[in-house]
Length: 106
Length: 477
Image (cartoon, rainbow over all chains, first blue to last red; front, side, top):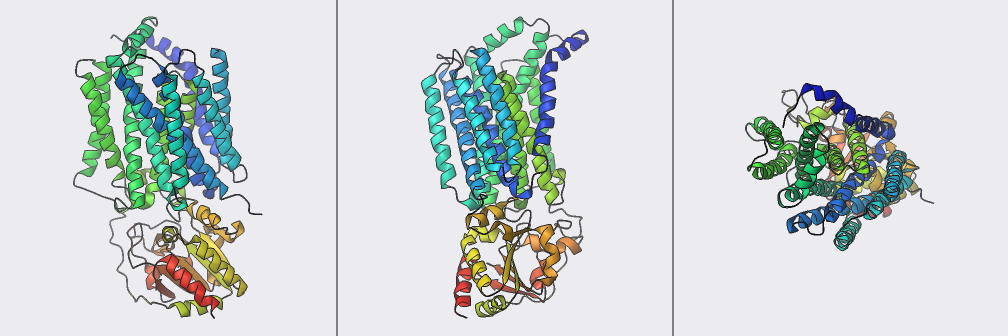
């Protein structure tokens, strides 16, 4: 592999759109939770934990990539799919349980 | 079809942003959680529609198994175990990300992934070199950070559960070993990315193992009281791995969702640190117990005990009572009994409120959730800033299973490790009764001079048993 300085502008140009998105997402992530009251710290953490299970999509794509993939690929990918699904489903269910406690009592 | 899928991802992403936004306000939090879940469901559904997706039965079985397991875990967990639960789930997420990366690596060595990657790169001209490098580095980050997040979360869970001591664990040259490990992992990543050779696969396996070890070493020196911060931080790391996995699969919803979790997770972590008057750096470096080098003060004075009957009389003839709930209450599952006590005191004419410290229990908001479960009215829960001025006018403060959050040393002893942490100023009340199992130190491992205060009396026993007896005694007055 060879690298040269001349290629750097082209390189930057090729990643620029992605870079835009990334930087905006970082600001969005910070802005969107703004001033969170302390009581909501735990549920919010739990909810964003469920959201980090978005890696489940990578697991699906990995399992679905090839019918004739090596068996070890399928085993690893399916295991990751199960774990990611537990993270997503369990995460949202736990968050819902916590938030149900905050419902105003009639 | 491709366009439809991309639009589906876009809608999912909008759901993520609106969901997180909603969850940051009490009125909209429940809807926010639903929005997040809907977004995730949509993203998964759209992915399943991807043309050319093979092994569909296997995918559906795995999804079903995971959903069943997730529902089971979440419905079986006690409300007191929520922090551990979140930590464990986060560990699963981290492990999942690491396994996706690992299966990609295996596919490169045994399957078509490497050929496909090289084909793709060939069409990119000179940029292909950079792309290849970038791809491998991203893959290694997913692998290593996912591994760290997994073992780190499991360690945090074990510390919260008391399976591993909550005390910061130290060994000689710890800093050198831990940081050295990180440097070795960085060197390995560079080596794997720049010099492909027959050693590459073993090196990747070594990197994975080192990351698992690092996760354990990273959490070991951090005190149990700081675990919420650690979990929040590890959650943010899992978000990062989701983002890097998104880069690998060129999938925007994973990338943006991951970055969103990463950024908001770090911000939330810093908010939590601020509530404890610490910096994130200090927490992660485990400086809790190193303090300022001064030895904590020797305790002087005597511990005074009080009996059930005297406590009952004192409470029943007070006009203002404040309950300070702590982790001991959660462990003893005594939240319902506290609520009963509060109702009985109300009939005896005593106004009874709850003082909630920001980090009472094991997580911010832990006590709110627990007391809400026992039907305690929302407006009886008073936050620290609001209730502190009331303590001098309070007849009796009932401290149940709390310790560090009422330790006056945080205000008046610069040598104390918890100096500077805001506390509930219960020592200003007229009487303080502490329900506690034993004289053991709190989670931070610090002696509490409140217990030696002349106004303080101790009522030893398990919170549930003591409260039960206390209620009976007050009823019988």
